[in-house]
Length: 145
Image (cartoon, rainbow, N blue to C red; front, top):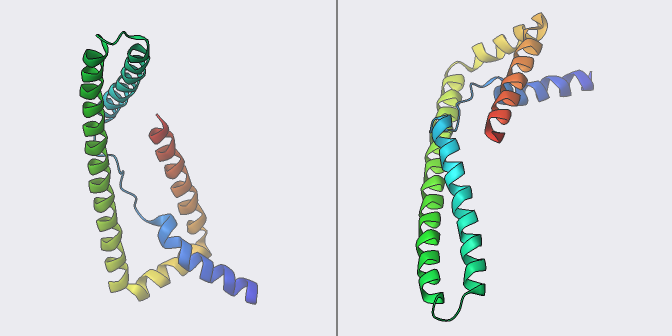
């Protein structure tokens, strides 16, 4: 009896997390994301090359190389800050979506609970869980790209 109760309570806690509609946190299109990633990597490579060049350069060449390094690092930091601001905005939008979902569920709490019981008894809960897991894995693969 205790085990059944624990399972039901666990399902009640985890179901909103598993079955909730997820919104992608990406605000940019994949092509833009790929271009930004390539630009980031190019700047990192350029910074490394400039550091090596600076260490090998004569005293008369060092100020010009240092100026170039300052310019590239400035661009790099600006791009990083812009990316972080975009991520924060996307996460805020995601949190707003979660809050909206919670408010909707709280309005119809008895109905939500009854639906969960029906889903558990009919086997629909397992189907929803598998679909949510599949969608999550797909999302994680896209993030890695």
